Image (cartoon, rainbow, N blue to C red):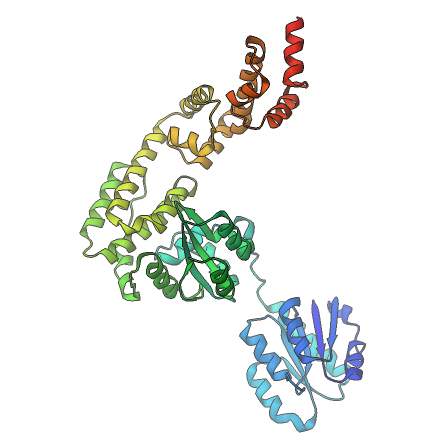
Length: 451
């Protein structure tokens, strides 16, 4: 645990610092300050468990520190020190929820009792939820805020609580440059997963505190008003306003709970008929937009590896034309149904044949995924699952095998062979070739000619 002792009297601070054997109470870290402004900064930065503070100090009082702790929702427990003449301050402190109130000069036994009381209370508090930021799904988080569905909603509640100390804004940026995206992602830091590319648009969240400087650096960025994630209706209002110029009110969601029930099996004809019938029965565009968000949430929760790429497009671009988006959703579902009927072995064979005939091309995961109608991430996992090796390793192996044949069967220069097997940079091709065969392409050619 961490303890902070604050008093504008240096001798008092030193006395309190050595008054008890703090480690015997489980307090491993003791910091002191005679400057109450500095103390406020320490509270913000150091995750202090216990604060022992004089109640009345120049500039920032102990009451001010206590109010700051409440406003910032810090876990810090507070013990106040005071003289007899400051009882009016003590009454206010008690109302604000201090743990104890000790009169100066502080007696060792009184301090021990007070610390034991605080530590007991800390021990009775529920342990803070450990948040797994490494696997935080930004898109699922956004959908959980926009939709009324309870699917996977509880898993995002700790993230809402953690992020709620800041205000955020939606942003959108059309025809963006790479430097614009890099700037936004740098400011978002660990929350880069809350920024998405879709076509010519960059969209997502930024902290309101960073919005001013982003406007100064990025000329055509558009921002919503600020909001907190715990204010769900505000989040939804600003999303629809910025991206679709639609004014959404809380009353627009009253019909959802009783009337949006999706069938369990997604990749079926009955599912497609159900969503089309429900969509066409809705009386206005606002309801249809809301319904599509609910549908996207349901699909994403069912299998985000398949629907993630499409979900980003549907949310930030597709709802401009909701009728077309519904049609596109049903097409994607239908295609996924066909994909699941194909055997994994057949899919692997199709991929390998395509690679063999396109070794000079880029052969990106997106290109291969489009060829077999699978999400790139899902395709990569499927290939590794079925073959035990990475798809990128197979592509590299086939390129180098073809290069070996060309080195023996033709007089082409190494530069030309490199390009024919998909490597634009010859030096990189030579490096890979030597790693695979132990010799450079030229050395391999000479060895084969001598046989």
